[in-house]
Structures are given as structure tokens and as C-alpha cells.
Image (cartoon, rainbow, N blue to C red; front, side, top):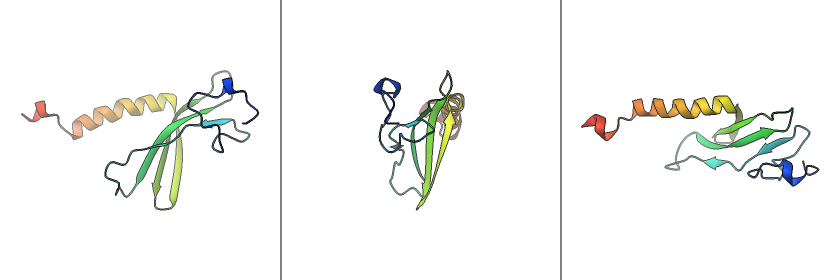
Length: 102
């Protein structure tokens, strides 16, 4: 993707080896979600966008790894928004707030 002008790259695009190839795929830096550091399954989250069509698809990039096994799952924008919304709802059910406990 080095042949693309800078104006085509989103501001979060790494513009390195992860932003290359014939599929015109932009990837952001992945952010780790580890809290303790000893999680069996590691998860990192980033952004992706593909330069195809009049409205380029994009969303969250979920990377899951256990040992040397790594899988990346691109999640489209609509599903990413639903995941963010539903995650909050589900977590509130799992972990009651102090006001609900008292």
C-alpha cells in the first residue's frame, strides 16, 4: 500500500508491513487487554478498514492467542457496535454494582 497517498490512509493506520498487499487492508496497532498478565487466552483489539467500493468496510480486529496459536477476526462496524453495547449489558448482569448489592 505504499503506492497510496497519505490522505487515503486513516490516521490510525500503521503504514508498515501490516498495511500492505493487494487487498488494500489498513490495520491499527493492537492493544492488549491483559489485566493480570497470566491469562491463558491473550486478547488484543485494534481497527481495520479495507479500501474497496464507495463505502470502505471496517470495524474492530480481534486477535486471540494461546501460546503460539494466533487467530485474527475482523468484525464489521455494525457487529462491533453491537458487541460494545451487548458486552456492557452482559457484564452488568455478571458483576452487580455496589448500589445493587447494598
